[in-house]
Amino acid sequence: MRTTLVAVACLAAAPFLAACTENTDSNAGGAADTGNPRALSVESTDDGCQVSAAEAPAGTLTFDVTNTGSQVTEFYLLGEDGLRIVSEVENIGPSLNREMTVNAPAGKYFTACKPGMKGEGIRADFTVTAAQDGSEAPTADDQQLVDQATTNYAAYVKDQADQLLAKTQQFVDLYEQGEDDQARTLYPDARTHWERIETVAESFGDLDPKTDLREADLEPGQEWTGWHRIEKDLWPEKARDYTPLTPAERATYGDDLLANITTLHDRVQGLTYTVDQIANGSRGLLEEVATGKVTGEEEFWSGTDLWDFQANVDGARVGYEGVKPIVEQKDPELATELDSRFADLQQLLDAQKSGDGFKNYSQLTPEEIKALSDAVNALSEPLSRLTAAVLS
Figure 1 (tube, rainbow, N blue to C red):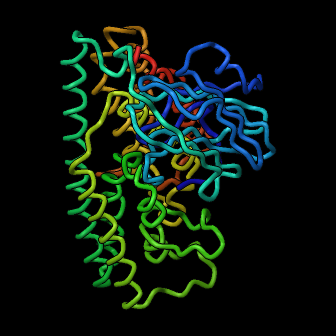
Figure 2 (figure 1 turned 135 degrees about the vertical axis):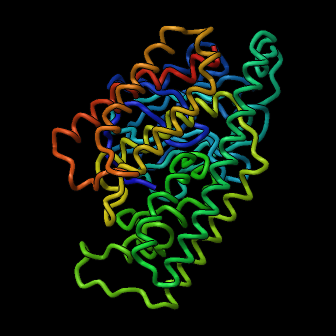
């Protein structure tokens, strides 16, 4: 969960997210006027969410989202349970529009606009009907590459979830036993596995707020639990008049964190993925870098943002490399550009390493932060074209 800081101009932030473009030409009806039933327009206002159609045939859907309201908004395609994020596009400022592309199979969904980027949003039923033109299935030539990409990505997510659970157990044990120095050392290492699959974790709408919410993002009356509640207790130096948690309170928050990570671990075991979900997840992870890590706001108390930064980039690269053989066939120039941009960003991150980890974020100079931000921006544009490339 993040505050609204737009450091990257055009990205999405969840595993089943969308390619996007952003401009200042507000025309909410444009996409629906093409005669293509898979091209839909969305007008988000301060109190409404008007989608041009309530259904579309299965396949590659494009939602052209225009914000005619006065608040920054988000648009979601949610699963039938209303919790699973199938696709989302964030940080749509007033008078701006962004495009969301997703490959949606037949089924029942919800669309939702979220003016102010808070609450459950303004929802409506949305139905994806069975396709009659075979567009849901990849061509026979692509099938082997698709199968390899989806199988490998599922294995990667499961492996990261296994490591996350094991290290969270170790971390919670140390924290509850009062072994603070060791817990502080393990904290960024354990979180690395969360950050590598963060967009998958965010797709479970009930888990992410309990596990990864920052104090600055709390809504009135909302209980604060998870990683960052414990982080503050381990690094209270920045807090004014802070009262350390009691052993009993530590046990409560530690056990709760472990329970939620266990639930995440169990849920991902049966997940399967599509190539657009993998590509969208790659972009979503870079959005996580832009809105929290490169700004130094994610790990406010500990200053371990660069560990998270690297982990998000790791996950984004894994997602991209999984579909890279497909991209190389369909858009080799894009593959070459992405290879170069990922390498440029990694070189800057490598320069900030210290021992087995990274420098504290407070040690970075403004020039170093700007260089990292510029590299993220440079990667964001070609990465925003990844989903369209693998679905073309």
